[in-house]
Length: 400
Image (tube, rainbow, N blue to C red; front, side, top):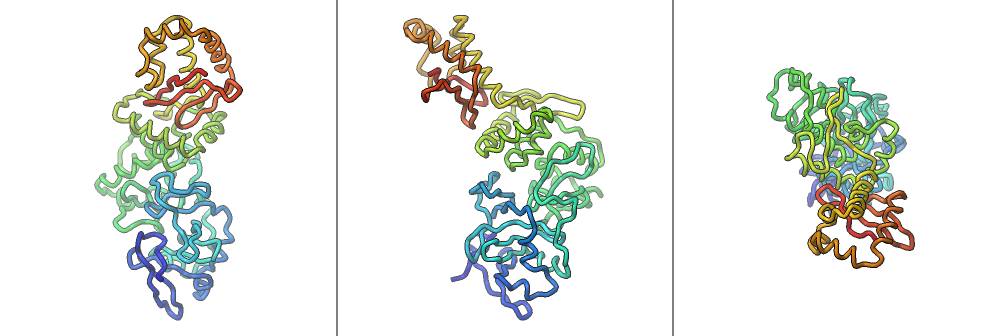
């Protein structure tokens, strides 16, 4: 039975004799598969062992778009497609960035997949280590004053504008570029701005600043561009880039990275930002931007600040007898069941209501557990004040 192509869906590999070695090729994408020991039969190419010896190869790439997929992620966090798998043993292929071309290797059976053109690019290569300035995975960009900070969306190699290739909203290096891509060098010489417009949606604040060089005019990204770039960075798990687009101070960055390390929290926040974009000027529900010296920045509070403020607002409204405001801070299901008047009557008739409000105020001063769907303030004995997130705002779902 023919083995499947790691990249193309429902496309079997076919045998191909190259010189004296029979390997496998995909008639769709023209990639090449080498079983264990086969690449070593070409003395002018690096050995698979040299790829496996390279450290830090902790990610795969997805089949659909080539996005990085971490070891802990079952599917691509950006497009939900499967990671590339070995056609021989079905294990995950690991992405290896070399000085000549990215490759995908199987740590289990030591097979290697080369995209179209990679076999030729590896000819005569002896040192497969990536250049010192080309990180294996996307890293934090040094500062918004360095005019070279975009990265290949497939392999993560750092790129200057003149080295980049744009295609369908993504940026690629020369080794990973798909057919029909437009080079940054050509755009600098006056290529029409259509492809560049799509590229801008994938770049961080730094790459957006570089666009002034590409288009030949100065350009300060507005709030919508910054917010869109922020959402995309979250979707692609580029947390260092996302953090750089916010007002979060350096000392708070570790908490930001920890909070958005959860893929469900990351995707929920990105969805909120994208849904707010059509209504954005500099403020929309669940999204605020401020203008600083360096440009527009997304305001990110501490994860617990928003639910804490919502619960405090509800408790303060109850204490003041402002039942219209208290009702407005309830979750959708509770607002459907109650009116402000009925809420007032329930609190008045319920003998334990005052005690519950008191315990909720004590919980307000304690820890809070924030998730993608809401937040909980523990009360002990498996009880908690519970808030849900609706339309980007926290609402009270239960105070016991």
